[in-house]
Image (cartoon, rainbow over all chains, first blue to last red):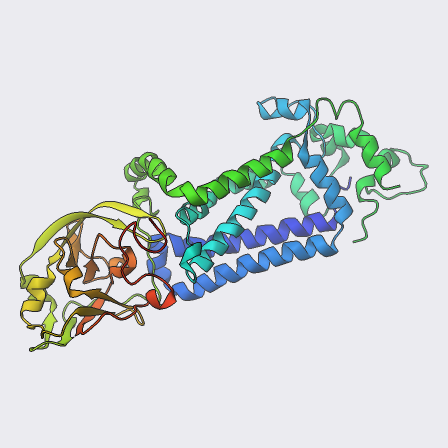
Length: 219
Length: 242
């Protein structure tokens, strides 16, 4: 079953790659032992800054030329929290979930909010060195705090997508786009049961395994 | 054609039960809280460091993360390295007797200690740093400044960093040329072997890796001042603060 369009996967991996380059260069700038061991602060500042700017540009570009219809649908799904989602968030992880479970929705919302805040505070750090009117008292604290929280979230994300036996199949959806139907039924029944009616009808004219939300995917 | 299946899905009674648009609200809330932190983060960091500093100290993380506050800012590719035998500090400019000081000679000058708080202009603070070093009065006495000398030009071994302080500023009671921090010789990343300490001004005036002190007629613009920062970096009264 098709879970992610190419646009969604590209966004995910561009974001992930940029995150780790920014984390690596940022930690060298931030952690005293690494700063001492590596040095080359001006170069690392350039790498960090240019990666951040390129990341933002790439995200905007993908949204501009990608499958915006699929993205809009994804945003709608992430935006909506129904009763089952709220139950899931208070620990009842066995209640049926849609294409995104409530934890994934929260992760996506935090990722989007943090990316925005990282970008704004990062620009202020950069520009504040050039015009002190933009050097606000809490910029460093915000940028640092976002990093600490992000590292915890990403560690959890990596555990669930790479190690945890029952959830790691989701990685296939984010790399190849599709997930096994039985897995989707077990973990995302509200999506699996309502979405791909056509797939369960061998006589249907379309043999595409794509769900309807991705049917218009031009990518 | 495209909205059909989507709408159908959203209207599926089971999925939509009690559905609320909380995602947008959450996004706006987190971004809003973050933006507020830009303005109130300093107060917040005092609260969080009260919680995180003891944890970091207890677990040894202090050596890894700047929980106590120190961050290492440099402007060159490599930090100057200190060789005890060959290191020299030059004092010259508007003085009767320019001289060059070796490290043992520096240590032989009258030593003072003080505990003061270090403030970075970017917002982080290191409380109660114990400094050991010499007062400028004792250092400059040997050079005999000429009457026209009104400022000190500190040239760092980390090129091209430099900065200036007025004579009356270095005469303040808690200003020193420090060679010890927290009871140990100044570490490389803190400016080994000597740095300026002027607690009432932001960190960029506290020049690290001082290699030369040139007495001049008036203060010029140091590294950060050439980039728009205030020449007199008084805490809370400069660089947009206060």
